[in-house]
Length: 170
Image (cartoon, rainbow, N blue to C red):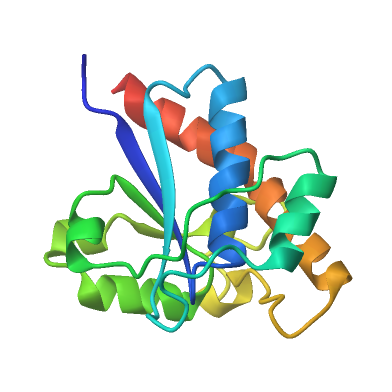
């Protein structure tokens, strides 16, 4: 059997945005019949939350939306992680820059994409700066901010699945 396609979602501390995206993408890959061919995980560019569980507010919006709540802990992305992923989905332009800088080679850096670049309603990267595709940081907000993050993640998820489906067909 071929190696699975490996996707990593990346935010700052790996306790809010990236675990939400990880859960949503796993759900969508399963629904598309690709769950056995695609592995999704997440990480953060910072070590500040390493070892901590998902933020309770992120867990709440996932649970309320019918998704499972991940039980893992925050992980800081390493150069090895970057080298061994087929697609790295950055939540912000800052995260994308850090991943590209930390990448061990140009090929790995080229696998970094903005998560919202897959949202069909988001502006095209041909006409905007990457920063305009940032997934909003809910950390300093309340429940509505976490709901907004979930909505932004869900809006791009199906296109991510189709992108990966196309890559698997090659």
